[in-house]
Image (cartoon, rainbow, N blue to C red):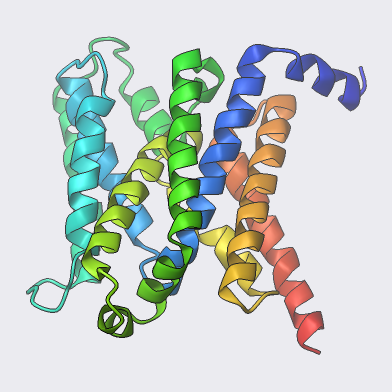
Amino acid sequence: MSVLTMLTEYLARPMVRNALIVGTLIALCASLLGTTIVLKRLSFIGDGLSHVAFGALCIAMVMSLSDEMLLVLPVTVLVAVILMGSNEKKKIKGDAAIAMLSVGSLAFGYLLLNLFPNKRTGNLSGDVCSTLFGSMSILTLSDFDVILCIVLSLVVVLFFVLFYHRIFSVTFDESFASATGIRCNLYKFLLSVIIAVVIVLSMQLVGSLLISALIVFPVLSSERIFRSFLSVVIASASIGVFCAILGIIISIILSTPIGTTVVCINVVVFAVCFVLGKFIKR
């Protein structure tokens, strides 16, 4: 059977189409927000929040909640708002706070799973591995999950398009933005909430340990070639979507883990952009 025939057969299945739709939308949102995160030197916030989400997810699993997102999402949003807030008067600065939360959440989450194994599966290593590195659950999404992801993705894209100039100002110079009348704290709060939502959604695709790759790699790849903020935003969104689609297709055909495959594609694309960037500068 040829690869094209196999791919056609797979794409005829609703679960594969749903996975491609959700994976593409998650990658698009992550790369859009990643532009602001990377340029504000907050790249590690993806790691920090994903590990907080892992800890909250472990608590939800121990409590046997019917819908784990009822706990994971509010906790992640709250921590995102705290981390993205002004650091000037804080005794613990942003990078140190992210490191503490990241390591602490992983440790407490894994400890809880050891003390109180998941009653539904009873498989500790499987629960931890799928949560950290992603699982094939993206192939078992319900129609409601797909619709929810589409709605949330539309909200993220509309927010970015409608408030593009304000996001640009807040990203590069908060002091100047405040002086021109922009409510920086409000936009930072909204960005925090949206970043937290995208990170929680991304756990379905790549797991909590690899989320930063979706946020950082497309932006870094586009920066090798482009210089203006708008061109970097467009290029990073395109690269993120391309890597997600190609990674999901390859993982389905070769039966490799979806999350790690998507991340590896991002690494390869970054290497290509890095080399192209060198030639362009010449």
